[in-house]
Length: 205
Ligand code: ADP
Image 1 (cartoon, rainbow, N blue to C red):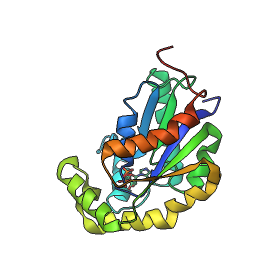
Image 2: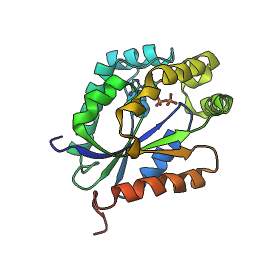
Image 3: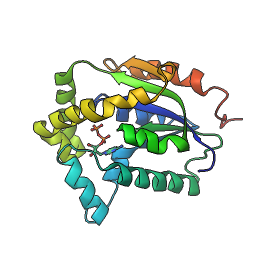
Image 4: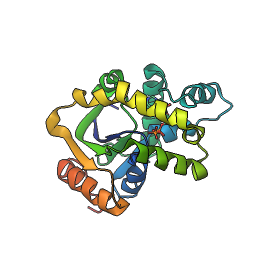
């Protein structure tokens, strides 16, 4: 990771739809989606790291910054080494990191943030409902328990929200997270594409 990675950050409260939008964006040629929640859930549950992750996530807490950033760096390097991500031409769509002011500082040297897309939903109860519904088919213990969901929302307000202060206000776009996924996608792309134009390659030449 010698030159800073051209990056868009998907930002917002748990359950706001970062993962849904990120997964769709990741299907666009030249876009690579990396969700730290998925990265953590991909760890072997029996391994030491996997156990450590579960000990935090099942309480609705953040994994410590050092561990998160170390794992994230290794993961990005793995994507580069296996040609799943070509930093010279691709846009990295980060979802779930940075999640604290400290993380923002720690990863700053590695990323060139072209835009921060802040998905906004003011209706907290709607987010809780979404996450409980997601629990029915996602096998996520942290979504099954309402107390854990509410704790995550609290952690977002106490630790994550201030990440926005780290970035220049001109880089931040607020997008309404309530609506049809296609409509939200359209609005997200309207923010990303102009910011990325000329900065990333066209996979079709
Ligand atoms: P959500 O945004 O719905 O809470 P995620 O899948 O993004 O869910 O994250 C699930 C859990 O993974 C978090 O509650 C936290 O324990 C851990 N996690 C994910 N990203 C980070 C991060 N950047 N720093 C610390 N912990 C993280």
